[in-house]
Image 1 (cartoon, helix red, strand yellow):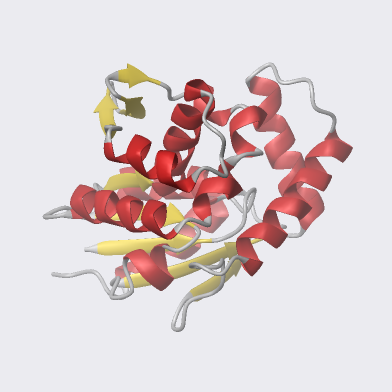
Image 2 (cartoon, rainbow, N blue to C red):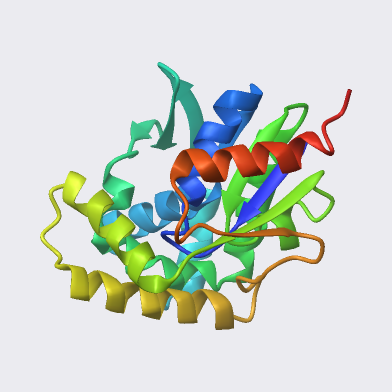
Length: 221
């Protein structure tokens, strides 16, 4: 069974998806980690993001894996654990360079579908229900007002000892929203048939309970 969750940054996707996967006994798929992983590789390599030919070669020679270690989903690039590093702003601010490339999106979709083969999963990202898993058993779109999303993101960054202030996080989110929703390939949008949930005024547990009820409606017996 596949539960596909889309939505903008700070809408609660990651936290809620992880809890849902745990409660349902499913695997959790963080699709964004794969894009962050390749962005990390490009930054480390020093390649120009505009050099598509070299980026394509680099991707062909990059091994990206998501593994569960001690009940935590970890991200590896060529055997190196980059789980924490891929969350830094230097990576976030450069993701849009590769997320607009067709060969990158095709490769990531292949990796994501491979991860899901033969598994019950909760997948979260920007195009899970629209492109990667268009036939998902349950499609969900999470959202929240930008100020709340920024506060959530700011809290995450503080945990990573990042020095950005809240106003910068708001500005960064606005730019990210615009890039995600207006890109030519797989733009962020609510998929047809998705269950829409605004998490602005919801506690995590409240959102999880509501979504479990929705998912149970289509659970395979």
